[in-house]
Length: 193
Image 1 (spheres, rainbow, N blue to C red):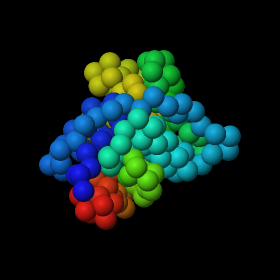
Image 2: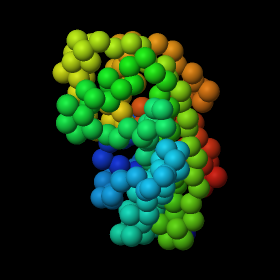
Image 3: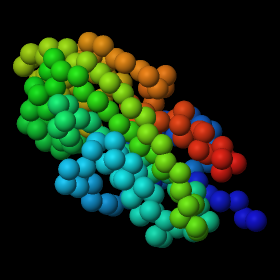
């Protein structure tokens, strides 16, 4: 049987960097999907649905592959905060989460392109944000460019600047950066990878 290729369905440099730490040969293909929220969709359901949708999109054109899809979603006060592409929206999000607790959900899906059989899992994180003043928000956005990140929050650069308390029940921050490696490794092992 021909060995299956491994495809990471992502254009994220953070996911690519995280996945490369597994020392598995892989290629990246960016899935072009609609990431809009469904009506009344819960954040964790959205993260899993979009992870599956990304993997499925790659499977439409690829054969003999194991495809990994992943997506992150953030919520605060039951409001889903998307991935801002403009600084004014990033500013609005950061003002909104100032002094509050924010929840992050990072879903992962591993799918066989030939059978479409798949497994999913989700990493959950809870973070208490410091009280942020306008200057802190402005400097964070200008210096760290957190656009295209859920809630304009990038843990690897925000942890000292924005985080008051981090509750890491996963014991693995990789999901907060973009790809829950601990959970992904368990799934890949079941595929003998």
